[in-house]
Amino acid sequence: MPESFGLGPTDRELAIVPMFHAMSWGIPFTAFMAGTSLIMPDRFLQGAPIAQMIEAERPTKAGAVPTIWNDLLGVLDSNDIDTSSLKEVIVGGSACPPALMNAFAERHDIQIIHAWGMTEMSPLGSVSRPPAGATGDDAWAYRYTQGRVPAGVEARIVGPLGEVMPSDGEAVGELEVRGPWVAARYIGDDKPDPEKFRDGWLRTGDVGTLSPDGFLTLTDRAKDVIKSGGEWISSVELENALMAHPAVLEACVVGVPDDRWDERPLATVVLREGATVSPVELREFLGERVPRWQLPERWSFIEAVPKTSVGKFDKKRVRADYAGGTLEIHTVAD
Image 1 (spheres, one colour):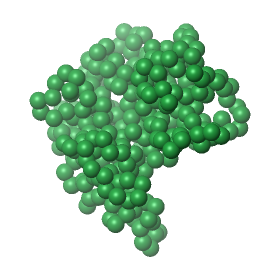
Image 2 (cartoon, helix red, strand yellow; image 1 turned 90 degrees about the vertical axis):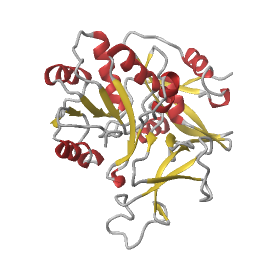
Image 3 (cartoon, helix red, strand yellow; image 1 turned 135 degrees about the vertical axis):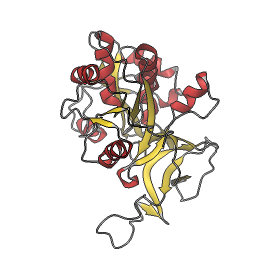
Image 4 (cartoon, one colour; image 1 turned 30 degrees about the vertical axis):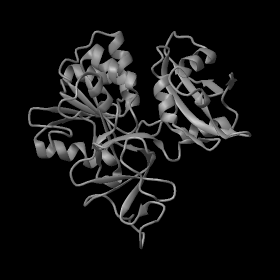
C-alpha cells in the first residue's frame, strides 16, 4: 500500500535486516510482488560498508534498526559519500531517537519513517506517515510516533486489570492487536497461552498510548518499564533524551534494584569519539527534558551497548553486567 512502504518497480530496496525473523516475510515478499529490486548487505552491517553500498548500488529506499543508522550517520557526517539516491528509510525493531531522525533529514535529506511490527503479525503493525495537512512541527510530532495500524489490524490499549483504556493519547497500557493474519496461538499449544493471548487478542508486551486519530506511540516494552516507587519510568524516553546530547553516541537505560524505590534507572552511555562529558552534566541535560524524579542516580560509561542478533539493545546483558559488578558505576544525586 502506498501509505506503508510504498514500493514500486522503479525502487531499489536496501534491506539491512536479518532474514531469520519477522522481516523475512516482510520486505522480500513485498519487493517480489511489487517488482522492486532487492539489495542485501550480507554480514557487512557496519556504517562504512553500508555507506559504500549506498553509493555504489544507488538504493532508493531502505529498512533497518536504529542502531545501524546511528553508526551510518557518523560515517556520512565524516566523509563525502553520495547518498542522493536514498530518499527514505523504514526503521523498526525499537524506537528511533528523534535526534537521529532530525539529523538525517537536515544533513542528508533522508527521511526516516517509523514502523512497528512483530513476527506474530506477519509482520507489519504500523507505519508513521503524517496525515494530510500536517506540516512543520505537527508533521514531526506524527513521525515520532509508531504510526497508524494498517487496514485489517485492530489495536487497543489495556490496563493492568485487563480493562480497555481510552484512545485519548494519554492513557497508558499494554498494546493488544488482532486481525486475520495475526497469530492466535503458538505452534504446539493446545490452546492460547493467557500470558500471550486474551480473548482473541495478541498481547504484544509493548506499552504505550493510542491517539483519537489512531496513531500509536510506544513508550517501552512491558519487561523494560522501570517501576520506581509505584510510578512507571520509560527507559526509551530517557534513552532518546540522552542521545540528543552532542557527546552521546548511544545510551541504554535499564531498571536496577533499589532498597528504597524497588527499582531505579541505570544509564549506560557510549560517548562519541573524542567527546568528554561527566555524569553530572548529562544528568543536568536530562533534567531539562524529563521530570527530575525520573533522573538516574547511577551512571556508567561503556565502550559499546551490547546488542541482540537483530541489532536491538540487549538489556538483559546490561542488567547482568550490573548484577555481576562488571560495570564501573558513578553515583550522582541532588
